[in-house]
Amino acid sequence: MFVPGGHFTSQGMSLSIPFLASPPKVNVIRLNGAIMTRQGGLNDQSLAPAIERAFRKGKPAAVALSINSPGGSPVQSSLIAARITRLAQEKELPVYAFVEDVAASGGYWLACAADKILVDPSSVVGSIGVISASFGFDQFIGKHGIERRVYTSGKSKSQLDPFRPENPEDVARLKGLQEEIHQAFIAHVTASRAERLSKEVELFDGSFWTGAKGVGLGLADGIGHLVPKMKEIYGDKVKLSVFGAKRPLLRRFGTELAAGLTAQVEEQALWARFGL
Image (tube, rainbow, N blue to C red):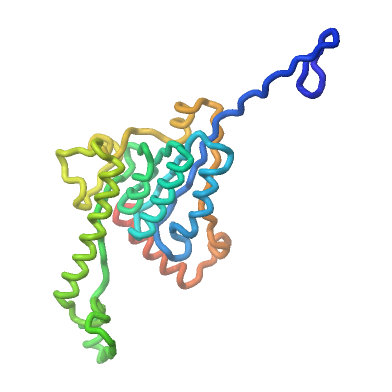
């Protein structure tokens, strides 16, 4: 008969039953929002604890990235992706990226930290480029009798001042910086996607495509959603645990400071580029 302690007894003999294997576990990192250093954005500082836990907690069989991001800071994109890649190599774990609405620009940079990228047919992927936008107020302040006074030490310190007429030398300098960042982006994508990328279409001019088209171009590996795909690979009993950056306390209670409002406006502008 069976007695407490996991043993069967028969005529004074006992037989131990090996522990049943627990179901495989996949830890999910939620990457939802614009990538920026400001409060509420995705950045390495806010995400580091969640990413570290996802790779270390519970001996996962894999890590999945749930991505919905229109992009943002190239530096923060690089830092987050590098952290994911480093931990995946240290723990020898496969990483899957699942794109929801958008993985564009910096969002696609994050997706390329994964071994495989899965998308919805209507997801938006790509936008491998660099953008900088501002306004010029020099004529506006002139019409309103406002005089701009700026004092610097260093002739380039006030470059791209929106209250002064545009300087061609400043624009050329900015474009040079953008080109360097663009080349770093291209190198990251090509290192990740290697021979999977199409040679027939220009992929690095800032264009973006639907998920279905992106699969054909090599920007993604297939169509698939997180839960059913993980069940397909690891079985119906796979356990999913979600990790992500904690929302600031003020945002959780629906209250925003001025800085938070500014960040919201910037984030909405990023989403708007993709019709969202």
